[in-house]
Structures are given as structure tokens and as C-alpha cells.
Length: 471
Ligand SMILES: Cc1cc2nc3c(=O)[nH]c(=O)nc-3n(C[C@H](O)[C@H](O)[C@H](O)COP(=O)(O)OP(=O)(O)OC[C@H]3O[C@@H](n4cnc5c(N)ncnc54)[C@H](O)[C@@H]3O)c2cc1C
Image 1 (cartoon, rainbow, N blue to C red):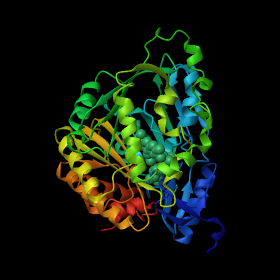
Image 2 (cartoon, rainbow, N blue to C red):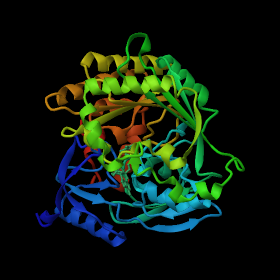
Image 3 (cartoon, protein in one colour):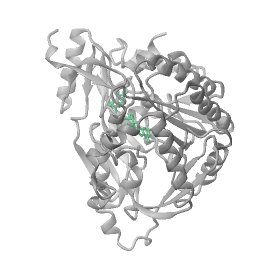
Image 4 (tube, rainbow, N blue to C red):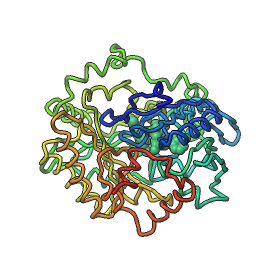
């Protein structure tokens, strides 16, 4: 192969799936064009990649070109008056909020980590803990530039090209390369949020409290103790948060200073956070996790219950960044996540089934997160008017096949209830189950746009093959 020196092992964020690909890391449009041309002449498919934070096979494809766009990371324009920013696709969420917070603006939608790139976030149409009031990131995008497979580029705006705009965002990089995006940031009057912690004794209470909070608080997110059973099944803790109103913060300039948002360098005041995952690793087994879940619920439902406090925005939003490389606790096998979205009326019975299925398989989730969602009008939308439950599972040698078959078992009640799945988190879903969640005509529309914009099907990924292209 002519560019064999580019051959690298590329994997999903969960480290459980990967493949060798020819990695190109352009830093400008001409580098992107060169990579496309090289792939074409070698007859290879191209998988687009941002920061590689998708858990499974969304951002690589074995024996293909992997076009890593994280080097296109320039801020092209920032207007602190209007809060409108123009960026290249490789600008990370971290760079984005650091740019805007000092001027009193915060990204309207953030993910649990600040590592993803703007291109990757739009391609997956990410949601945050404020999905109910604010929708997905795509709803805050004004326009983007799309380079399609034949090398042409076009500007697609929410206002003037509503159909294509809603087709491309959320279609996991299958229609073209987002090379620039214009986003509207959200005005904030403080770098802090007010947080309320609440406990719930069972799944029904978790869902009811989440639903009650959705119109009162900007952010609503729940954690579930997946080891609890019987009348405690689905018990957990919820965190609600709201931005401070103008005048509520005595010193907004201080709290909006990006330095005031830095996550602590040491955990518990002593342990350098870079070392923390080594301390957590011995707990990363079913017995250890049962104990951790029990302890977390015990503290959260007693001394910490109903506590109200203020916290820096970054600290509240990017909880998963507190311990760098925490995913290494799952080595050597890595982890997968399964996030399903279920209409509100069926959520209790579907999530109850899912938690019971995990018990029956003897493979409880080590981290379970609950959110409230609203539907949106993107072609490949993963959201419904309901709830999502994200379940993390370790991949253990000798049990991989069993885990994959459990994912199928977890997915079946979701399909029956008219739910959806989130490709950004997926590594194991059978394609026919994913496809069966779409309304008639939606996948035909996807195929039609693909045939127009990328007739040779050059843009592919392991995930797109598995969920869409392969029977
Ligand atoms: C710890 C953690 C927490 C997370 N929390 C959340 C959360 O709260 N909410 C949520 O919604 N998601 C969450 N995610 C998932 C993550 O936000 C998405 O997977 C996101 O797409 C990652 O962005 P990325 O830049 O890493 O893209 P990648 O993972 O590298 O790629 C994602 C997709 O975008 C495509 N792509 C990348 N760049 C471009 C481009 N310029 N043009 C077109 N297509 C492109 C790729 O082909 C791929 O299909 C989380 C992930 C992690 C690891």
C-alpha cells in the first residue's frame, strides 16, 4: 500500500472495538482535499473522526482512510455582543467554553466530557442534561459548510436549507464533512450554577422526580444504583441545576474567569487526579461496584439528600472529566455503553425490564445515567418525548459474546415500545433492531441523500456499515 506508513490502530473511546486504518491528520482544507483524493485513487472508504469520543465504531473503519479532523481547530470569528461563534470542526468543547465564558456565554448544549469536537457533536447531534428545555446541539447551529465526496463545498443554513440541515446533523458523518460551523452560545450571568441533590427510593420515584423537575430546572440528570433489586430496583440520585439570574452572583467577573472553572488538580485534596484511576481499578468488578453503588446511594440518600449548593459550570457539567483516563479502569477489555430512549409512558416498564435483564445475565451496569428528552426534527434523531437510560458495561474476556447478546435483549423492549437508540454510544446493536426504530420513509430518505451526495459510498464507518449498509 502506497501510504502504509499511515497505518495505525484506531479504536472507539470504549477501547472495546477498533481496527487498523490509514490515518490522515490535515490542518486545513487542502489537506482534507488531498486525503479524499488519495482515498479515492486507492479505492478506499473514508471514516471521519473528531476527538474519537464515540464509544464504539462510529469514528473508524478497518482498512479504510481515517480522516482525523481535530487539527482543523481554528476559531474563525467570535462576537461577544451576539454570542455567535464561527469555528472549524476540530475545535473542542473545552476550547469553545474557554473562549466564550469570560464574555458571559456558555455552550447551550454540553456533553458529559469537554473533549468532543464541534464537528463530532454536530454529526451525532449531541444532547446534554438540559435536553428537555434546550434540545440538541443542532438546534443551536445557525449554519455549517459541508464538503461532499466529489470535493464540492456548500453552506447549509437552518433558515434557508432546512431540509438538508436537518438531514445532515445527526447523520454520523455519512453525507459530507462539516468544515465550518456557526453556533449561537447561551448568555449566562455567572460562572456558577445552583445545584440541588435529591434521592429517589425506586425507579418510579426516579422517573416522577425527573419529570417534575424538567420544567423547573435547566439541567436534570439522574444516577441509578443498578445492583439494587426488589422494591429498591432503580433507586438512585438526581441532580437538578439552574443558571444564576443577573445579580445573584456577587462577583460574576471572578466566577466567569476561565481559571475559576478549572477542575481540581487533586482529588480529596491529596491524590493527583492523573493517578486516581489506578486507585479505582481494584474496585472495578461486580463485588466492588456493588459496594460503590451501595455507598453512593447511602450517602446521597442521607447526609447529602436535599442539599442545595453552588458549583462552577465546568465542574457541574463535566463530571466525567474529574478523573483523567478513568476509562482505563476497564482495561484490558474496555467498555461499551447502551443508551436507549423510551417514550415517557413506557419508560418505567422498559427500564425495569432492562435492569432485570442485567441481573439475569449477571452483568449489571457499572454506571447508569437517566435523562429526560424531547423529540426533534432531525432525520436520524435519537430523541423521543421520554427518558433515556445509559448503561456502561465492562467487556470481559470470555464474556464478550454473552454481553453482545445481552445488548440485543436490552434493545428488544425498546423497539417494542417505539423507542430509539443513540449511535454515539453504541458498539453492539444489531442493525435490524436499529433500523426498525425508524418511521416509514426515513431510511429511504437517508438512502436517497446518500446516493446524491456520496454516490460511491466513500464515506463510511464501522457503525454505518453495521447499522445501515449491511444486512
Ligand atoms: C465520557 C463521555 C461522555 C459523553 N457524554 C455525552 C452526553 O452527555 N451527551 C451526548 O450526546 N453524547 C455524549 N458523549 C458522546 C460524544 O459526545 C459523541 O460521541 C460525539 O460525537 C463525540 O465527538 P467527537 O469529536 O469525539 O467525534 P467522534 O467520536 O470522533 O466522531 C463522531 C461522529 O462524527 C463524525 N464526524 C466527526 N467529525 C466530523 C466532521 N467534521 N464532519 C462530519 N462528520 C464528522 C464521525 O464520522 C462519527 O460518525 C459522551 C462521550 C464520552 C466519551
